[in-house]
Length: 50
Image 1 (tube, rainbow, N blue to C red):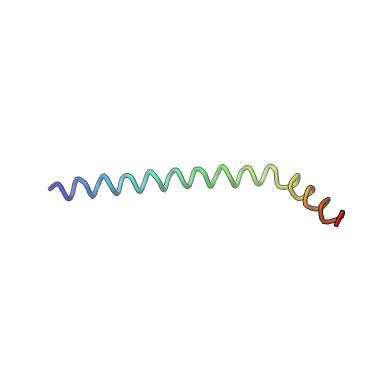
Image 2: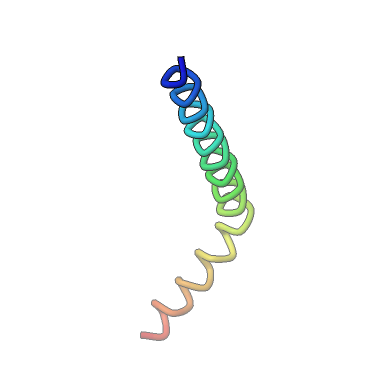
């Protein structure tokens, strides 16, 4: 019975970590979408100056 309880807690912890990672990924993708054109412009300026 204890093995089942600890297994569930471990599984719940993994699900929580997966949700956190998914949230971080969504935030990073959103940031890249919003700042993408500005970042592209910066790199384009660097490339042109080289």
